[in-house]
Length: 93
Image 1: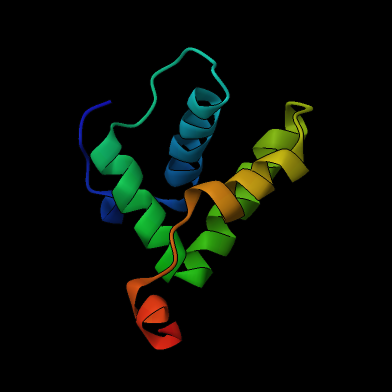
Image 2: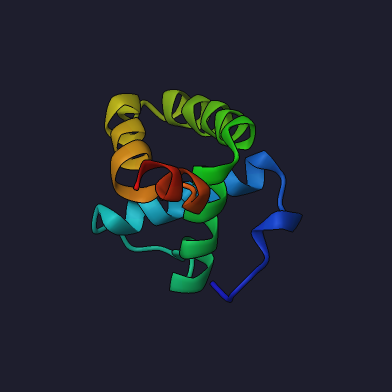
């Protein structure tokens, strides 16, 4: 996938990108987001809790409908993918 501005995407479109990134991280073939898009997405989801909740709701519904593991995907999103907001990081240090 080419570099894109995730600010222009809906929560459902972001959920689709997350799913592609997740599958790529699991070794599945597909059209995963490029590194710049992944970084922007991880930063945005780390800083915008409301957006993250909307995106997670859309992605969770997709995972459930496909019979895939919700808990594995949620762990990946929370621990491996989304980055802490820089403001939060500065407050902790």
